[in-house]
Image 1 (cartoon, helix red, strand yellow):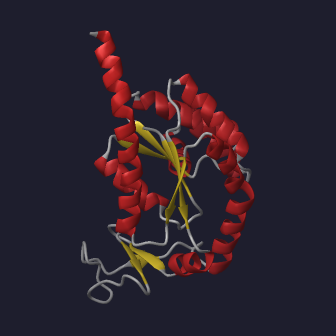
Image 2: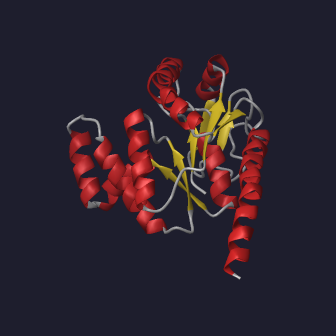
Length: 232
């Protein structure tokens, strides 16, 4: 199954993608992570992207598409893809359809995590992580059980992302509305958009996404059974 997790930064896409990777035969394809990995590995795509980024430029859609194409080839058809942070524009959405078709795949769902901007600002500006193990915390919603000590590894150093501030969050929300949200109507015409309330507790968001996937599997079973009986 190939899906897009859609929503502005801070909506919880990464958290939900991690769950799907752990419990399903799926792989998270985050273009940011893939770019950093390609640059670190000095692959041909990585070297090209590195030169662009060092000059202060934006990596082109062609480079991002090449990364996606190469990753799908390496994954093979048995592993599902979770597209996180891609596509961001209508051009990328069209290119993704082309890439998937080339690999004999198609999008099953576009799952949008709906969030409230004011609540999202509060969520993002208060988050921090353990510098050692990466465990996530929040100033209001999840402090360590012992002040200043990580619950998981007992480390005492924590860090915050420098872009987790109100100005950046509101800018990203505006960018999302202007560039990414307009790709939804095309997917809605295909009947593959599903929306989940991203402001619910994480466990409920996970349960809602699991229900979407379960419904898809139930619908697919009769088709598979029919094909099997036809071969007999």
